[in-house]
Image 1: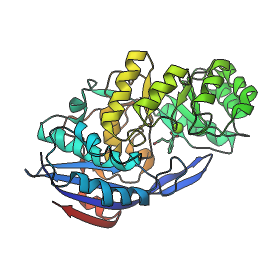
Image 2: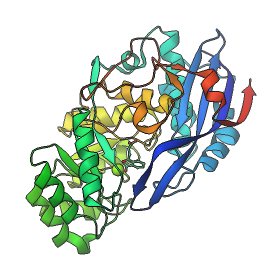
Image 3: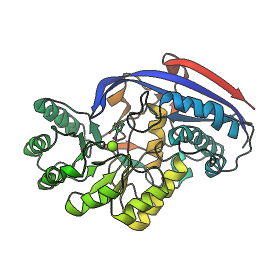
Image 4: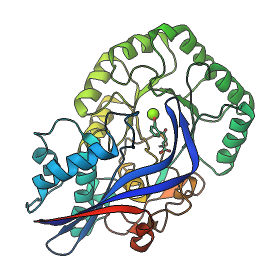
Length: 369
Ligand code: OSB
Ligand code: MG
């Protein structure tokens, strides 16, 4: 296929409820949507998941825009690409900037699947027709509010509850949740808020049989996590530390992680996500699909990826209505009894709602080759 035309749209949408982490509160979600067209009139869609501020990784909406506009689009526009795995090779001269790369590569994967008359899930080699999902709940300072929120998500059928923890808001929170929900599949995400000095505190979590603790230590660490894992019964799951298959291999070999959270944006695209998945499957390391508070296009990519066989733990891909008054795809992503039915239309399987998207579009740039 020949990449003929690309639109980059800058979007601004409001989350229904502010998302609170150890870094701050996010309510306005700014992101990029990419629309890529081939010479036959097929269209592929991608979403950049970088936030406005660089608190989760070093990337931001504006660094993504810069990379996409000034480096990545010039590397693909007018080019003939037989398979999306080639995009990574074209981008090899650019270090990191994984979320920017993933947005372009994701749109090309959608385009490829549509051209081949496959669902994106099938194009990736996925098999499932439904996926299991959990919920990620931001920090609630008030325990009673958190308990009410958790009960609501259990009632909606979510298969796993993830809560955020930070120093001063950890053991007591988990103790309270276990008092109310002794058997619910529960995990905690620390977003790098601790250091090895906190080993004794983190060991106290072992009493609450959590499914895992996500990214307790520094975002660029794999050494200290290995030291910590030796002292914890609770499995460690790395999120921020994993940017590539090489990172995954080193973390697994060192014993720094027993589970991996795969985010397409963080690892630079679906091809690398699949390679990490395949490696983890060989190693007996279960994976699950993380979330970046995506709008519908990014969410659709997550759903397709989760159909691969080693995604054996519920992901953070909740339904559209959890985040948005109105999503930018039709139909929206619906969670029923903790499952999302994998769409059967070609490509990402959801139709971007062009009229609806206009309301949230603050800028649009067109490229052609
Ligand atoms: O650490 O997994 C995380 C959201 C933004 C940035 C990082 C994380 C998260 C979440 C929410 O936990 C996942 C979601 O609902 O999309
Ligand atoms: Mg996380």
